[in-house]
Length: 351
Ligand code: 2RA
Image 1: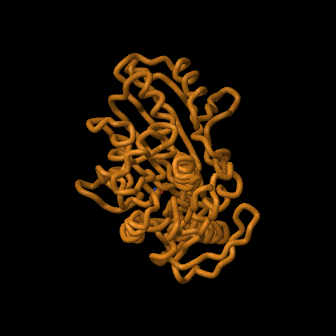
Image 2 (image 1 turned 45 degrees about the vertical axis):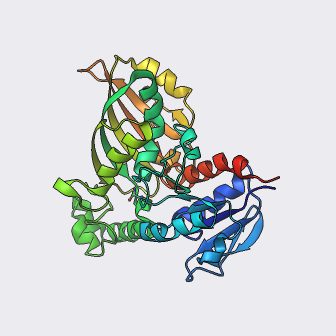
Image 3 (image 1 turned 120 degrees about the horizontal axis):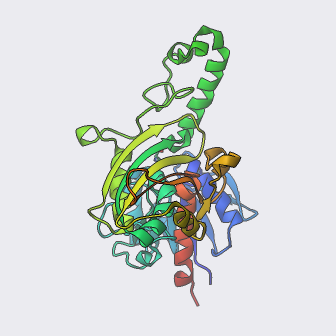
């Protein structure tokens, strides 16, 4: 008998992509149960061609569930993932609640699938979208050359801030275009947009905002410390040197990162390009002469990490510079969670 799946947070931005993925990927599930807050309960969503009614989150929704995928805020996961685990399900959590818990594996199926078997709390964590959209390209390079240091600048899409981020960009696009002569034309976007900033600390349209997440110690943002902590845990390199600067850009979906990676041995750009061409979950798009680069407008709606601009550092033969972009709602969230579920499904099938 195929295992039973619950999707908690089925009506949110990531949950919606999850329902699409469950309809389009190989079917490994028996019953699928859609769960959301009482506010969204009763909605009908088509999954695998079948109309399902969303049920409200309550302890009994986990009865008989083998795998529960959580696409909800940290505090909801912190409360409910243990409830699902206590009911006998494996909870696969997309929030930040458990990522750095030493008893919770942080799994990327292309990199460390074996860690999904060791889950003392019955919980497996999914990394943050900024880490996930770049780490799939970094791991094969690490395996070959031995990673020593990462310097990352991210270019994060507004959908990383949820639907409210997307709505804010759309509203500001209208204002900037409508007020074009009022200020936008000269770059005075503050005047054109006014003070409705949504989840961002400054206008996001026609701008780049060097801030994502919340303020942590010594001026670092939570997004920046997540890149450092999660990369170290996923790669099994607790002392890896990581410096990240996270930036929000007016892109709807598709997180990008410019990466400077320093290795233990010398690297050649051509060899690295060839290695990445054969790496799972990676697509190389790297032909500047033909105008071919990895860009969010092409990566959106696709599964892999798109990598290009691969160059050996001019000043350090052990360092590579490259650009990587991926769909933050797919590989950055729903897809990685679905892939972890698929890893577990054969083990949990009955009979
Ligand atoms: C963001 N990485 O882009 C976050 C979402 N988890 O805001």
